[in-house]
Length: 121
Image 1 (tube, rainbow, N blue to C red):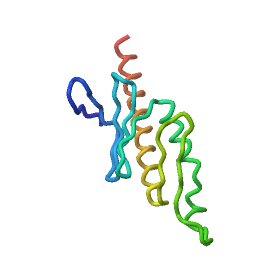
Image 2 (cartoon, one colour):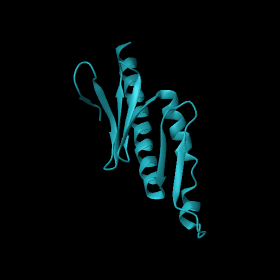
Image 3 (tube, rainbow, N blue to C red):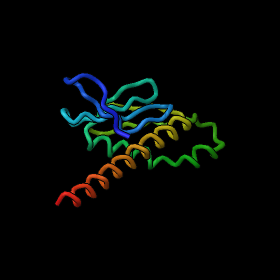
């Protein structure tokens, strides 16, 4: 569900949220605001896709089952983006859930818009 928030100068549309964070879109600046792990970060769509790819590539099963004395921390650094995340495995799972829901909502919005456009023409 898309919800309009904010003033006219910074209107954000909430794309998806969980109890751990939210993703909002600003049509005026073409940026995405991710509020997660106590941090607000703005991304353009290209960097949002890079974040999704980086999070999806983390082998969560290996991280959970690895018995080595390695800290259970993942560092997500994206080239050409100014944000970096240092997350526990549980936070990685929560971020993955947030991104999955976001991209499902974007695809659903695209499908609905496409169907409505077909009805009009």
